[in-house]
Amino acid sequence: VIELAPISLIPYSVYNFLEIARTWKNGAFHRNAGHVLQAIARSNVKQSMPFQEYSKEYPHKKYTVGYAGRPSGPEFYISIQNNSGAHGPGSQQQHNPYEADCIIGRVIQGVEDGTVDRIHTMPGKEFLSDKNKWVLIRRMHILVPKGDGSDDDEYVEFSSSPEVLPDV
Image 1: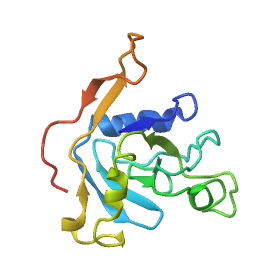
Image 2: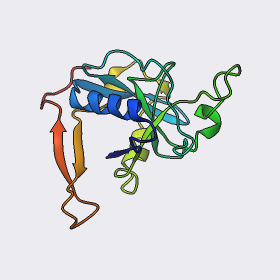
Image 3: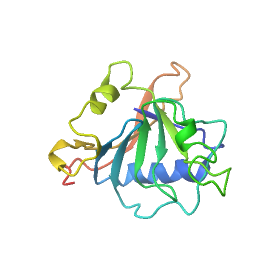
């Protein structure tokens, strides 16, 4: 489960990820690097963001989720270590010390039970050309806080992608 960053910090990137989730067709973790697990995202969102949106209030900590590429997305990654040096401000473009990969959220379920770490143990390293080694992402669900004041950790489904098996 990914909790998105506050929309007040990075509104365009959060909205874009919600559109990716809402129109999700298929995807998979296809890159198993030493510092990230990168996923292909297939949805109605076909183009990258027109700019890098970053907030220093939402840095590249372990288990945060960011957009991959220049400019951002629609592919995304989970940081499996603190990536402030590799993806934070000024890390990838020396001529622009302010640009950084956008962090759109953080993993809030799948860490304690070891799910993210198990994905990181998938066979192969870096970009995996053998699709049989990919870890498929079958569906996306958009959850929102229940909002009745009973429990801050309770969510209800707002939207979900179609129930189809992915053909990556």
